[in-house]
Image (cartoon, rainbow, N blue to C red):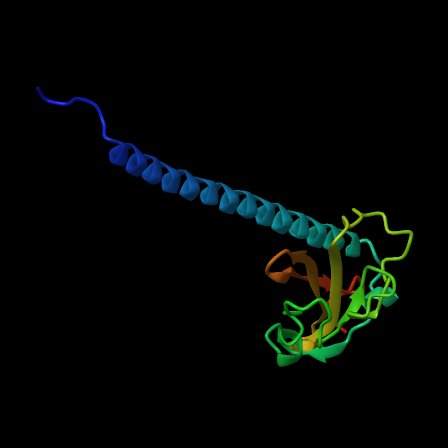
Length: 176
């Protein structure tokens, strides 16, 4: 007579294979949650950058928060590109010209938005910075190139950032 059913070794092996499979799926779940959180942070940072840009459109062209750091002739000028990446460390080596949060050592002028800012307040852990460059193009055209950088701490990776730029034109006319 032939024996029917499974031996104990077959059951243990099946359980081991099943356990390994479940562990792999749980790791995918963790990766998915981290990815969702990262995407939410990028979206939040992008919203904060666009909000600041929209509010800058309402500032006067001579507002002290729009004082140029330097005059450049191109958006790819080394002075501009040197300020794009603030790095992964909490404390940066190249400071931004302006920062949103008071007493922020990563900005030359911290607390620059002030208490009267009418835009969206940054959630805890998000930091807005901006640099302004006088953009002098051929033919006497002048404008202000504004870099907006939003940073946040991504656990396990260090500081992350979203960078955005906009150009503000002189309301007195583009030509001197």
